Length: 310
Image 1: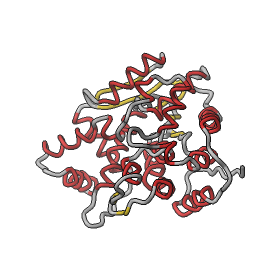
Image 2: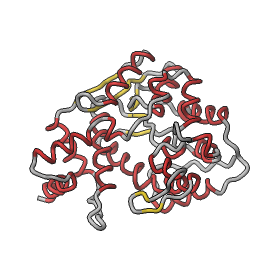
Image 3: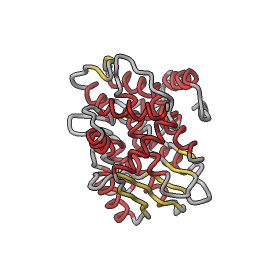
């Protein structure tokens, strides 16, 4: 298999070209065995010698990373944030007990979340809004607030993240729609699963990777994303639809791999929502908007952006 691994940061055009080069590789078939091997190799390839962090949400993606690192007997702590009663905090605590992991967690108050939002808005580029559509920007801000909150809890310089798994193994709602009623996603027509997944990978640098790098760089820290690995991408994207998703479950083969590795069912079978929902930060933003006299979250974010410009 040709070595196409790239170094970050990368320009948007070079990222798309790189993904297209992976898309053009043929005659490589993913199996549970070689995907497991590729994933484990990607996780342990460059493990830091000094203590590091794992962003543990209690979902299958991050729990696999934690289990593999635990088996390697490496020095790390897990980190999870949310507001009181959030699902991510609840499940992350359960997984930490079951796997004997050290977990650093915090329930954030509304005023603390507002401060996080203001910091994130200051770090991220100003939004380019078309037709008053704030969906993409709201996701960036809310997920970035979760990330900033988590990596701020420890002195560790390196944090492992499960980003990328959703695109590789059909974890998003638009993937569900791609094999059922189709429709649109943020104004874009949803395609078949294979094409939709490749298109999602091409958008990842703009929507996810560059966002996380801006946040981690602001703290002089590094985010490591083992699912964003060339060999793993090629193998996962060769899988047939039925290996990834059906009417009952998504990320099917990844859940099987998790169970084989000894990840508790509380994580391997969990149908997790995005970080902004699992942490309930999105709910907190809704409350903050109402507290500040706004019916819509986007108007509340408008007010925070206006404060940045003062």
